[in-house]
Every structure is written in structure tokens, then in C-alpha cells.
Length: 241
Image (tube, rainbow, N blue to C red):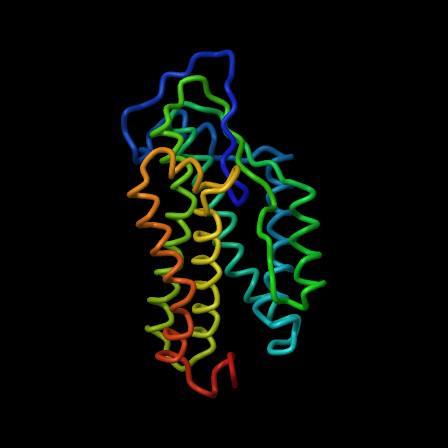
């Protein structure tokens, strides 16, 4: 999801697996690895759109960073956070025997661009589209796990970038990595809000304790960014230099 995993019922009965982690030798998973033309194009359009939107936010409407630098950093953070988030939904759903495809939401794309412009980079609404799931026998638990796959992916990516920043402190790599980490924490947090079609709604309905743990963790990740930055960055790095 960036806009939630949508579950639609199909007429064909689906018999889901009992395993959670997909096997590399799962035949159904392998069949769904390659994106179809329309799906691939809509995923790329959505990625480019929210890359532009995030670039306005992380640069405070380009007052802190110049547009090319902001776009590059945003592309790294959004490219990992958004695309892998959606693919995580897709492949876990396929693992459970369902059909899954990403579809962009045109109104969400427009809102993602307009809101940072009218607020001068202060606010962002990241809902460019969703992975639509077609399956007759997807249980509430499986739907919750499919929904959790996206935010969990964001958390893993964010932790990777934080580790990368500590490996290369006082450097441009650390600056880019920390911003990418914050973008991923934000995407995970935003999607865990239990409202409407967002991932949080399905996770909350499945297991409230699991939802609470992930929600609090991503929220802490977003707001602990300043502390992490102060520990890693120097006045000579990209941010604040």
C-alpha cells in the first residue's frame, strides 16, 4: 500500500499456503515476479511523482537544498521505500495464492504534488496508489500479514540506512542515508494509521498488539531522526552545512 492493500473477492477459489515467508522455489511467487506493462508504468509514475513531492518537503521548499540534490536524495529514499513497500505487498499476496497488481490513484498523485506546493514544503500526503489483491480465501490474518509486509519493509530499509550512516559518519553518505531512513520511517508510520484503506486498518483488525508495536516504533523512528542526525552529522556534511 501506500494507499492501503485493497482486497477484492474473485469467483475462483484460492487455496492459500500455511507458510508466512515465501520460498524462492514457490512456483506461484516466481510467476508474479515480473511486473506487467501497465503495472510497471503506473508504479514508475507514482514513484517519480512522490519523489518530486518529498524533495519539496525535505528541502523546506528548496530553501535548504538545491532542487537537483533534493530530488536525488528523495529518489533514493522514495525509490527504496515506496517501490519495495508495494512489491512486498504484492509478493506476499501472491505467496498466499492471490493475484495482486499495483494501481496508481490519480487524485492521490495530484494531491501529493499540490499539497507541498501550497504549504511551501510543510505538508505531504503520500497516497499515490495501492496494490489490489484478488483472492477468495484470504483470511483476516493473511490480509493483516500482507498489509504488514509494506511497513515492515520500510522499517528494515530505514534500519539499513541508519547503520550505513554510522558506518560513514561525518559524510554526505551519512546525510543521504539519514534522510532516506526518515522517509522510510515516515512511509511506514503513515501507512500504519488505522484509517480507511491504509495498511493500519487491516493490521489493527487482525492483531491490535502487533499494530501498536509497529506503529509506536515507526513513530519513534520519525521523531528520533533529529537525535540521530546530531550524533552522526557534522557541520561540514550536506545537511546544515
